[in-house]
Length: 178
Image (cartoon, rainbow, N blue to C red; front, side, top):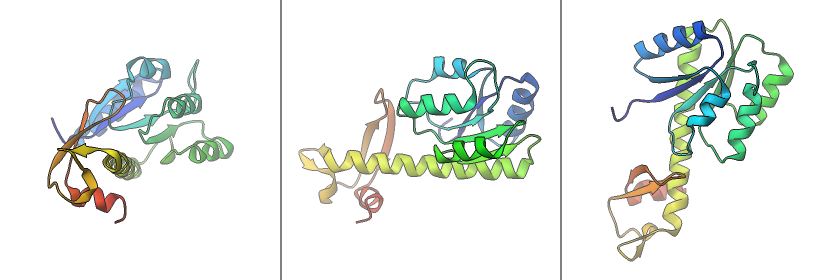
């Protein structure tokens, strides 16, 4: 199902996992749920694409700690926090560490959809920046990618080099602001 955006939901409340999964599924998202931050970390391999919808208060590792762990691992997946126990200091900390949004339960469906759309726009920008970085140093048929001599190429990116980005020289130049 190429082109379908994946939302990884991490929440310890089974009713939230079920309700949000159902809502996002009807909106056309692919949803993968995790009942704990550790369960997500056990799956995460660095090549996953999508965004994370993350609760703050959970037993063991909490949402803020998971966010910080993912940052240390070099994860660029956008994070939207969804919590029933949000406070201003926690939301400020989450946003300072790059969260795309900080929503409270119960969440308005429209607000959630808008936050996720923004998160996917951020993911696309992250991938474009990665493409630009790779393109600066990548040779394609013996020529530098950015010298304008190719019109189409596929790059392998990600921790395990299994995420393919298809690009044109114009896309790469645009990503670099040239």
